Image (cartoon, rainbow, N blue to C red; front, top):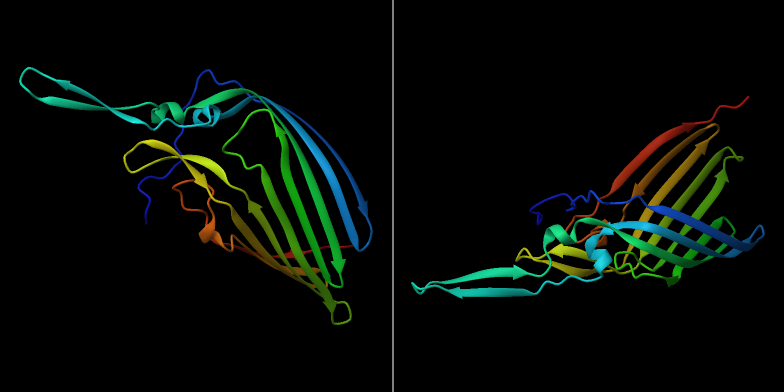
Length: 237
């Protein structure tokens, strides 16, 4: 009810080059029936990274100046001048090179019918600041399962979550002037339940539980609740 226009602003660039990505990863971990943990590192090298120009520039000049001119008849004309235009800031461009080194920590354990999982990822070093990309994230899950009726009925419940860190976005304010705004962190929650009866499995999934606090982009309503349900029938010889 507060949106005047839909669609993400973007302007083409005929000189845009394609991206080239090289990614290397290594991981070491220890696993047992009840506990596992691991530590990994990921290095990514990107040439000609595609981003809107405001990301490449790293800032937005929203300074407004007035060009005042006086004519012989005494009339004064004020012309508004902005340093960065909307067409310039939202035009796709290439960033020559952006190298990123991340480290990822994973921990999980089982407690009776419960299983817990936690993952943390963070940027160690980045050759170029990308203000639209978070440098820290968390995600995990809580899973419960059990079997009943002489092992013929299986029931499982799972909650998945992911935490997104702060980042910047470019928006257009009430004066039609582009400016940078900070997008606050938020937590995304999904729920899934399954019931297995012999070779049939019934499932339901609810995504975006707390969608009212999502902040994926400035000025745009996040996706609401999504419901999915169905039947899985497994055939065996």
